[in-house]
Image 1: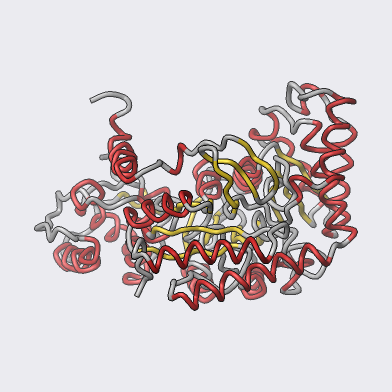
Image 2: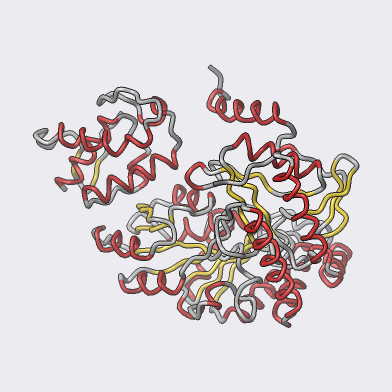
Length: 399
Length: 96
């Protein structure tokens, strides 16, 4: 027995995966060429697994902003905002997000993970209760662990189940916080935020929505699934990340409650370095692109999603949800998924392998994320490679 | 393990009259997770003996909540290891 013995099962899985081929967690890109192209083992591959939904990682305005930030303010802030002070750009970005979402307050955090970790754990204390969707992201689970609140899980995307659990559980001395996501990252399925909001407020609970994967790509103005479902003004707390549609790193949480400013006391905010100037400036530039409105980005993202979803469905692959910027191809077991992930890469397509504990119910899948930067021809190529998997029996579509 | 305190009650101090019934019901709920068809007893360690992960345990807990119309906070789960612990906790929550 050693301190590392607790990782024995994980090691066993890695060993099994390495017997099949490359290990997904160990993949190294020789180079990244564009939002949709990279080089692996000397060969160009199409990237359909990078969460680069709007394809802004190589956007001229965003890159210019990031370079200008380095020229003006250097490479890092070298400390927390409490210790080293606020850069004007941190404050400006927070105000821009508040204005865009119609919220009273916004706090920027250093990563998306830290956003939920800080906001949820600092909002809910020992006298409070948190109700979370069973398929919540790891950062939401970790936030609940970090908070002193009592945490109750409800069935995924099921407002009736939430209603039942809120009714069944004795009210606490403090408050109740319901936490859901917009688009779920693994399956690409969408939360009925309108119904969740109604149920939460019926029971006097506050609602917290994580739009990490839906900010920018949903809603008439890109303000997420809450906007698309007409409940943005009813959301108490709204979080998202800079590392997906905004193609930087960092995250934010906004609230219609002005007292939310008090959460700058949260430990994951106070005791970590603030986002670097280049991240903040490029996130601001990407946000400005969304605020100005670029219908073409939005239209292309969704057109590519529908193209890929219908193509894979016609081949007989089972997809976890309707067409969305995330398309999850269900596979029968981990060994099959890892083998196919390797074959896809050999044939020039990079997707994500996803398995437990990141996926619900122990499911293994080939996870694809679309980008507005993908061309119709690139998605045709991706489909062609999936078709080759089927035709050469490298894959057997799920029954 | 330290007996969990739930709503002021300490698990294991309530009448044991229904223990067998609770145990039988829990075994029924565990059946889909018992892939190796292990003989279950109060001392069976849920995660290691049944080789199930923490997410499956939380899914099982949701079934338990619905079966007994109780709320089983997640922080309570971490202090439970065996089927006996689970039975004791259900009994305490029902009595609360």
